[in-house]
Length: 139
Image (cartoon, rainbow, N blue to C red; front, side, top):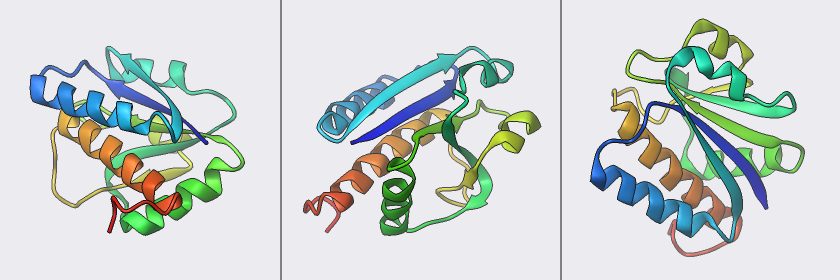
């Protein structure tokens, strides 16, 4: 089982995004223990990062992975540590957060709203879990 945290700046306002987030959190139940922390601004992110966690920050200039490579990375890291994903607000992440990250990850060179990327992250985590477990969702 993977133990994941997501730290995100600002609340989700769009109803359709909330519904999608809730659906993927429900689907992730058998595969992960996932905790989502919502902070009011970028400066409060650091206070939510546990000391012994592998930090993956989502930034446009981060490394891009296929879904299978992402799954393999989560499986490898998840055996050793908890994993924390960080999603900044509309202005990105502060340099202090980027500097403490173990990995910078990008889902695309395109820009998405910080609310939409939350939904995409949860879907990709779910996809990764099904890949790891050999389920048909990915194929």
